[in-house]
Amino acid sequence: MTVPTKIHRPKPYLLYIEWSDGFTSSILLETMRDQCPCAACQGEEIMGQKISFGIKMFKPGMNELKELTPVGNYGIQATWADGHATGIYTWTGLRALCEVHALSSEQLSELASKE
Image: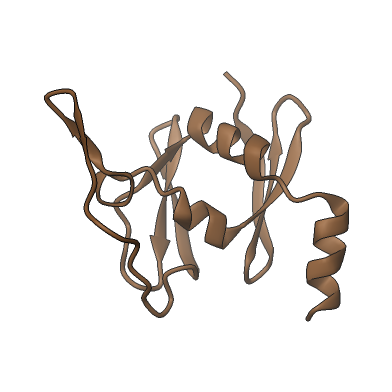
């Protein structure tokens, strides 16, 4: 199984991850929060039916990461400034998220120029 070897936040809005196979990625915390894997954020399946809890809520601090806590040896749990902390990002799920939403060097440069 591929696992992170280094996770850090170089900017308040960015998470950088190095993986055991050499892959590296930077993703926006907003993207990570949007993809929170918990049932409240993604909906849940009940008797084969996907149940959604409505439209996306916007709260102050919702994209501000306060803490990442290891969960066993299979993932991390994020705690956000708005109090949300129910999503567990498995290594497999986090890796998939990073592969799909990794920022290019051009995107990183553009974000840096806006600071």
